[in-house]
Length: 519
Ligand code: HAM
Image: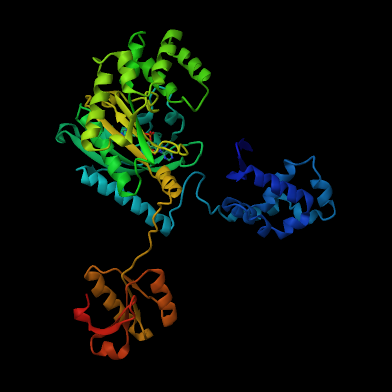
């Protein structure tokens, strides 16, 4: 049993279950106090979706678990009078093992129809915005070679990798992000693709994460990347596309903002202290933990990558800066960091999204490959983790043996934005909508109804064909559920004349139409 904040991971017969600690305690308490409660289970215990499964399928095992973890309590005494009612022998518990866990693996999601409609709504916006900006869609395999993700900078993403050996003894991994796959494909395509490349992708990524609000073990990421543009016009365009997306879904600059900095800021500070490139990348990963672990820990970790005390103090002072003027005073105006940041802020004015962005030197992002501008979308109420993140990665391709091409891009997850929309009560209702419902009024006319459905579908109309002989009351109920606009009834007398009845469901108006004229 692993105790993790308010949750407890319980391993029973190899099944891992996450249950709220407080519920475990309540159940142990209940089981300990009264064996009758056990007999009354599961209805007494349906307190949590995972728990429902737990109580209905594994309550015998749970009893054993509860007893082992509560040996010293009154459990034995309480059950002594009716031992058989609760203390099933282990072989009896195994009788239940043919039942499967109906929940998806921890940290992953099913998408039942209503969730799928919401996901499609979100992805359609991702797709439409990308296309508005002239990007082409790509995708890569979910399973990639593990080597794609092996970087030496101590990134969290490396530890979170779902990796294994396949049946051909190859080390493979479920992709935790899309950027290495993009780099691989760009190298593979070589000079056959003219620059700049502007690609977008929406793909599922896997990270064995500690789960918090909006952070899951599987998530979808919308990525937009520009390959072959060395100038910050690339980053400015990318941020503009995210702003366009936010506006479409009703999120304003009052709700979210972008914190922007550049890895070159740190590089310019550390160049005064002769820090190697590897130590620089490691330092960025450590700095990204600021706010997540105590400052003293950060300092200790920075010392371990051989940064002097002076370098660390200097770095921390710069990282606290929130204004470009202050940064310019420190670094001077001639360096690339300040020059590029100023250019980006000036472009933001021209694009019209200045109110969305702010300079914040503490933003470095947690991936080793960023080399220049970095940015993250944040919720202004500070309740959620980063909504999106990205930056420039001009040297990623050479780490894979290709020629470097300047590149920048971002990743935008599907989970945090849904949380934000919920917070702001902007989550849309995405109802099921099937334009027509077609129903035969006689079992013998099922074939005729199929013909009608085929004719309509051929004309691009969506049709729900009633496949069984159902009473009209049932058909009307179903029509309401699928939000059908028309009910097409196939009755004997009309059909003999090659006609059907069309009922407009919003008005109740009904007329007969010749099958050939049905649109
Ligand atoms: P990242 O900052 O690791 O960057 O992730 C980008 C976004 O993906 C996050 O801001 C968040 O919205 C979402 N995300 C990441 N991990 C999770 C998770 N466990 N659960 C839910 N959402 C998550 C990258 O992945 C870079 N490859 C982005 C990029 C593209 N940079 C350049 N091009």
